[in-house]
Amino acid sequence: MKYTHLLGAVAGALMLLATPSMAQDKNHAAATFISGGPTGTWFPTATAISEMVNENYEGQPVSTIPGKGAIGNPLSVGSGKADFGLSYGPFLLAIYNGNNAVFDKAGMSNLRAIANVVPNTVQIVMAGDQPPDTFSKVTDGEKLRIGVGAKGSSNLFGIERVMEEYGTDFDGIEKAGGTVMEGQQQGLLDAFLNRQIDVYTNTVGVRSSDLQQAMAARDAYLFSMPDDIRDKMVKNWGYVKYDIPPGTYASQKEMVQSLNLSTIIFTTAEMDDEIVYNMVKEMAENRDRLISAYGGFENWQPDLMPVGHPIPTHPGATRYFKEAGWVQ
Image (cartoon, rainbow, N blue to C red; front, side):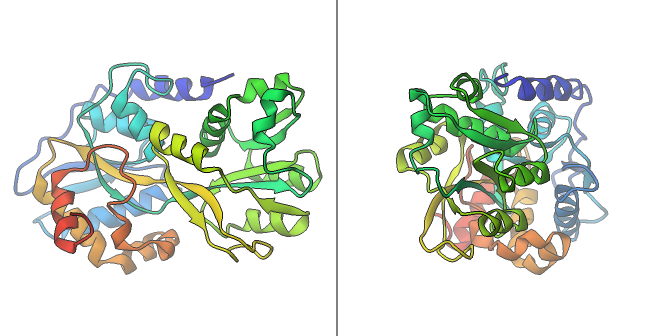
């Protein structure tokens, strides 16, 4: 069961890599920005950023194209099929490094991070009768009933990595007599509210309506992740530490230690410094336009752009970050 949902996605994405990248001119770059599906949030985000960058050039040097998501996009950019892309930090790191469960070939070490945009937060809701050390007891035979998300989702990926850092995995949970429920979030939420599972998880923005409902409709609490597990997730998988403030949810009285799944705009080391600099500058100075494209930017500030880069940062972006005083 382990990794099969990821390897299938990689196999599909590799079939897309035959087209060469568009040629670039130093002053008027012709570049593509690969995003997500037209109905998702990545496509309007990439479109808005492309339009802002284009205002610095004659014509429309940056155009947005739909992509295959967090795994397919780095493969496309790293191979030259596209020039800019959006992905999640852990997938970007895995493809940069290579020779791992996500990407079993030599790493694409030419990839470079540009900016961290709207993050999603790993949120784990425990039924009130579940002790905080439930996960660590699975290896001792403790039965765990947990909802982990749909196959191929960033939530399922992250929760499986957390379980591995606890010394088990989904197969181990089931061998201990527990339940690993996969599926869409609404179905998992219903299962939690109906007491079919005792742990509900989602990797999404804080104050999401499903998490509010999970906390309000059943005796439950947000799981606070131990520092050693968070440290491993940061080091091994490119997550970023994040503390959910007290009062984020109605019954949450204390700060909860968690992780952010960074959403990263990236390119390659060969991309011209000027266009990357202009991209970061336009994002920093046009937050309202980004909010208009995707409401998730309401909880985002420009000084977060250099935070949580799992791979080396492009020098064009670093130049702006230094000018703004955000990095040394």
